[in-house]
Length: 160
Image (tube, one colour):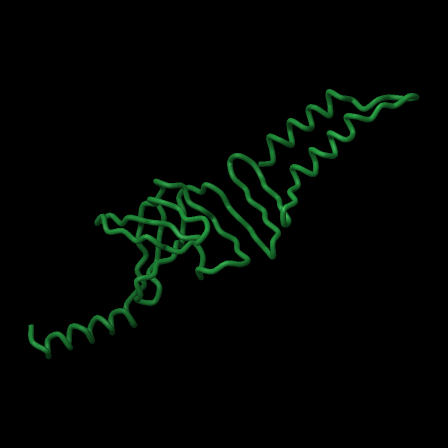
């Protein structure tokens, strides 16, 4: 190709990227990076992208993110004609994470996690039950140890 043809091809590509339709494509999830909120994906033509975004920007801080299961399908969109992609829809979710200024809520098949800093709700509830289990009442009724044990088991099952 000559210089004129290359120039035409380049300008046509730039025009198509700027004014053409956005492309939404299905892809398979190969790996999940929880720290960066990105995933590695593979398109049907076997090309791969190692950093498709799960949120609009890649940075630390507050977020609401759904993390897809490895092996599931996602729909991704190309961002403004660049080589960057963002996940638009997820077939199967491993877990969802909400994080705001050090407070975290996570939901997964294994249960809930609610944390603020290093404190978490499950540990606080278990400590309360363990403290009540040790109470001995001289006059009246002692705490129902079976109900306390059942409540402790339920908390362990519900919370991560």
